[in-house]
Length: 442
Image 1 (cartoon, rainbow, N blue to C red):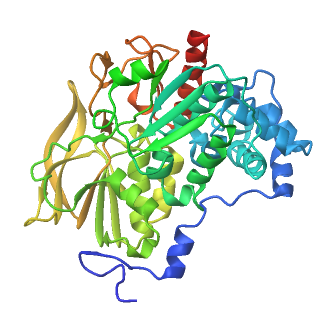
Image 2 (spheres, helix red, strand yellow):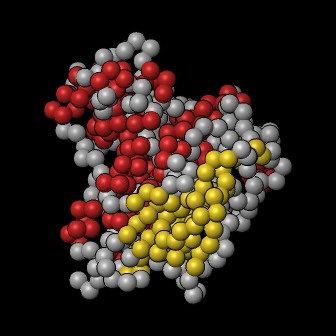
Image 3 (cartoon, rainbow, N blue to C red):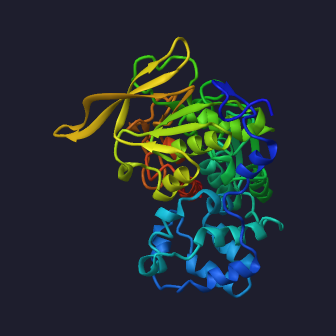
């Protein structure tokens, strides 16, 4: 092995193939039948269960767990998929520790919730090895354009197809999946699961997928409104916010989402270069994913820098602890003020912060952290907002059914106003918009 974690600068192959394979294996091993039965037996099957209320897709969690407990995992999967057609991916990536499991009665009473996420994966994995469980209604003759093959667009398309409508999904990338394919840490979704899930979903029929076509470059809303009976926008957020620090244009100052995407698409992770010293700026899930994967690739020193305290980080306590367990250092109450280096980044200068009368303020004290690579994970923004759309906070404004300010156009997922930027929330928004579109067309 030519390189090690101590190799200066940016280098590939810092770890052996065996170590990399172990590092990027499944974060949570799936439950076997006995383990699932034992886990399901811990559920109290609560009436008006708080876990159902906490789930953005409102899955009947006590019902599907009871179905697992009675040995009918296929029925459990049906219960899940009726509400969340991407229940397989959500079982892998959903922050259950801050949603359903956080409010579980067992968690409140004992500090150990029912393993809802792992039980959901157990059931959905079984069903996804079988024929698709849903059938289409009679063809309506209506045709809907869905822009974006991410969670919101896929969920919307599937529900519309179930109602008998014909759907064409357009996506700017070369393959579908959205952030499920390009924006989630590799160790959370292994064995090409995102593409397998898309292939399984498309078995419903009535959905045509056209990749490599982007709104603005290849498509216009005016033409789509003319050619289709309705349009759904699930275009996500393609832009990355700027640091606002002097020198951030230096080489090897990169977007964390691009780093994650490159790793997800790499056939051989040992070929992906990573710095000896890596700094990630941000406090959300993307920051943690980028930092952990840099460490797993063999970076010696990886630091997450966040401008507020740990209690204000968007990443859950579980995600923060995961990062720490992999050797990532988390530095809080610092904000970047300058990127130093002769052409390429070599150090990042931070100013300490504190809450003041007018909000977050710099204290005037600074420190520097060595960096061969600097990843930005400070949020994304909508690029190329469609003309005529009313925006709210930089996103497309929608009502509670996903309808935009333009008649005949709906939106959901990260590009639209709504709930948290999560896969499960995007699925709920896509599903609900599809129901509203169906009602409008009927």
